[in-house]
Structure formats: structure tokens, C-alpha cells
Image 1: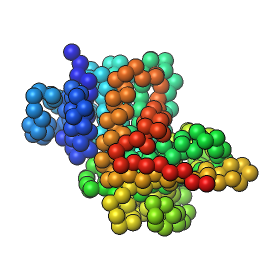
Image 2 (image 1 turned 180 degrees about the vertical axis):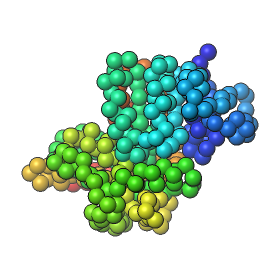
Image 3 (image 1 turned 45 degrees about the vertical axis):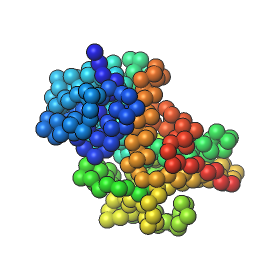
Length: 321
């Protein structure tokens, strides 16, 4: 019998948090990853047989097939997703397992969304971006669109406070930033050196220096609005993106939609620590995938909707003018 969930990368920080939340909600979880000893130590935290352990070799198709077949939903927390996710997605499609990842690299999010037709043809569901990025900014964009706001130009920005500084996140960010500053101009993706286009945006109660970055938020906003002009910003730090930039323990997101006639509509999201928000988004998305999800490729925010994102613990969405 399949378990409810397979969490790939369950011995890591983010994977462990997500596995704990899924078990807390009553799910049967397979802790999967490359290091059997670390998985066993992770499993020892749980009681009552709520979890099982499966060692997985990402380079071995048979091993990936076993992981995909072990549960109804596979939650992939192993990055960099732009480089490592494709074989996992393929294994899930072959096994008929719903797929969910935490990707926020622009290229990874775009690659997953581009498999929409394939997923629909197979009757499968693929979901990406189940974390603070891009779910926080996309929820704002979706909330503004629900009010009838028009979008010829979009600006989005995020500043997440993180309680953890993990090697996995740092490595994924470093690889993503190598793409440079990216944005959509006249409907085309354009690139510039990282740091070009720096500006200051005020949200979350602070004026924040930000730069355009190649994150999944860019593709999510472009997909949701169809706007020809889209820029995604983050607070810079040491060549990557910051964990907040305002000196408090809150995490914040901002969206600005400008219509063709110049009307500006804004929205802000505030929440707590970034990993906690990511855990909540991933757990809610995984739970949704257990209950007859629609076939196709989605972002987590599109799958869940702005209202559900706003209902997550400690989270508030406020619409501006």
C-alpha cells in the first residue's frame, strides 16, 4: 500500500519540517533521501510508525521509480531544482504520482510550468513554487486580479526572514543568481548583470534596497497576468538574496500592478519566519494533491488560491489603492 506522502530530502532542514507537519496532520510519510543513516536518525523523532525510510539515488532511474511509487504525493525538497528536478518529475509522471516541489529558481519554475500539456495528457498534477517564493508574491498578484485590476506592468518583491541558513538553500541561490538580473520587457525575457536595475521599494514598514533577480516569482507573475512588463525584486546580500533586510523577524512581500492607462494597484503580505511559511504552503499543497487535484502544471499559489495563502498562520494580505 502506498503511503500518503514521500518527502524527498527529508533528512534536511526544510524536508524535515515539512515531514513533521504532514505527520502532525495525520499523514503517512516516507522519509526519502540519499543517506540512510541520516534518514534513520530523522525517523527516530517520530512515534507510532507514522513514518518509514527509503534511501534514494537521484542518479538511478530504478531508485527514483521506487521513490515515486512509494506514495500518492512526492514532495521534492532537493535543489538546485533547475539541475536536479527533471528526473524526479519524470519518475512521478511514469508512476502516476502527484509531484510537488519548493523551487524558486526562475528556470526551474518555468521548466515545470512548460510541462502543463504533458501533465494534462497523462492526467497528472505537477506543482512547483511551494514556498515563500514564489507563493507570497503570487498570492498578492492573484488577490489584485480578483478585484478586477488590470496589469500591463508588474513589480513584485520579497523579503523573507529565515531562522535557518542551510547549505542547500545557499547552493541553490548561488546557482540561480548566475543567470543575472532578469525581467520581462515587451513580452520577452531580457537579462542584465546582477545588480543592474537596483531601486528602493517601501513595503513591510521599511524602505528596502532591492535588485531584479531570476526567481520563480517572475514566471509566476508573468503566467498569472500575461503582462508584457514584469520585474521580480529581492533584497541583495553578498551576491545572493537577503533573509529580510529590515532587522525584524517578519517576512514580507509586495506586488504592484499598473494598468495600460497608468492606474496603480498595490498589495502587501506579512507573515512570520520564512521556513515556517514555506512549511505551511508545502503541507497545504501536498494535502490538496491527495484530493483529486486538477491535471496540469501549476504553481502552489495558483493551486491553493490567494484566500488559502492568506489564511495560513500569522499571514495577512492587505490591498492598497
